Amino acid sequence: MKIGKHKGKTMYYAQVDKPRVIEYEDVIKDIAEMSSLTTGDVRNAIDRLAYYLQRELTEGNTVKLGQIGTFRVAVPSKYVETEKEVNASILKKAKIQFYINRTLSAVAENIRFAVYRNGQKVDTTTSPSTPSEGGGEQPGGSGGL
Image (cartoon, rainbow, N blue to C red; front, top):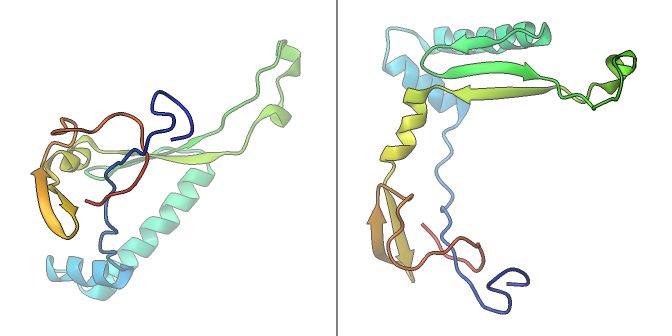
């Protein structure tokens, strides 16, 4: 480490291995297989949802998607000293924010983690917020989950 209370020490931390990326076409196929919809129906629904989000967010509207979450527009502003200085030029770049639904967010509490060292599993947990031995708060070094 170059700074902080661990300056001059070699420190290690856990990191997640690259997970499998599920491609768009696989999502479409899987949803179709789990429902009475065809792959064309699913593709069209996702396409229309993307269009709908673009349309409504462009208007500054908030869009709630039930079990998924909520999309909203945030436009930060610079601070000015007087009311007369408030105008469109003090607005910063608009951002789209996504707030995940609590049920979907709770999925993270049930993810199983395994720690491997030199290809051997050395630890498992479903509660990474309570680490076993070692740890620390400062990142550094390398490792894998």
